[in-house]
Length: 477
Image (cartoon, rainbow, N blue to C red; front, side, top):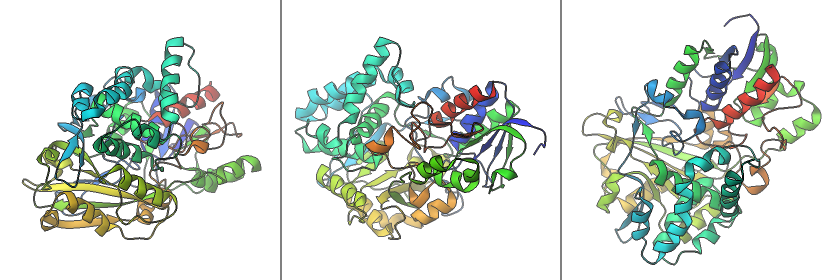
């Protein structure tokens, strides 16, 4: 690494750290990225973790905002080699009677599959989907009021809907299947269905599925950070991997530093350079529940009872609204659910590069209390077998990843929390430290935060890094 003064040092080469570095480099600043792991990517990496030739996504897998987020606009990821794969149906939700709902991209077609809830589904989703592209820049940003009346009105409409608990939205439906579909989408927030703002996840997940189909990169999630690294290097930015940072003293001479780390790691590295009051606020940051994940190498495709699920990229395995709500409520109380809600992807159905010919991969996780030591391998397999009898006979290898193992792989997954922090109302608009005017800055004018612990939170959209870079650039001018 150069010993000359650089404008910005970014600690952490996850998607947000790389996004921050790219944005600063595009504005003409010299940038160096330092990453503890041997490869870039953070929670977006891929490897052969079960058997040779079987490519698994280590953490994240499907990207509802991968093509829609403003930072990724313009097709530059694709020019750097990312090829997006879309399943015929973004989402599938099976039921115990052997039937399933699959999400059609067209809102009208989806609504038509919901019986008596047809009109209500259209009333809820159509305005969102029709204005999704206009809404997203404001939704994927820190709290603000747009200056343009039209944008402000759309954001206000969305905000009123998003603040409602998922249970309130479910109450708008009369069909059990519609309620279950909404519960599965809402569960991405890892909140109880009765919690305020849990409805936001349902709206954003369903809206993005209709708008862009929940695509994923051919060859594995790691294609995204590899493309981002190439973009940064083309802008003359630097990247050093295999270099854990323990203190600010280890950093080269620089103008500003940006940390793609959660508050806990920031305190460990930069705590002495921050005032006591701000340190207390960071220390009070609340982490959310964790996840327990399994990766499967399979001798064949998962034998779903509902044949249409063969065309679904992502599946929500949890049965009814009440069952999903009960599982998420248990996790919120610090309990391990007996029948967890399981999110599963089957990428090799649509991307043959993920497994040897005729073989397949599957990726699945469930929510657990933060830091849980419970082995959820069998409960997860039980939920898959429930809707796909005989799947166990196809398993060639299984790798289970506990919350502790997730954190060891990616330090930002504290206690298995993949969302960068609890998503509840009290923290949603104040993360990570209550600085409404600029949540990426700190009282130390040279230190900035850019991880998913800042707005707009978790998800591979690059917007935490993008907004943090804008904040840091103001300091560098």
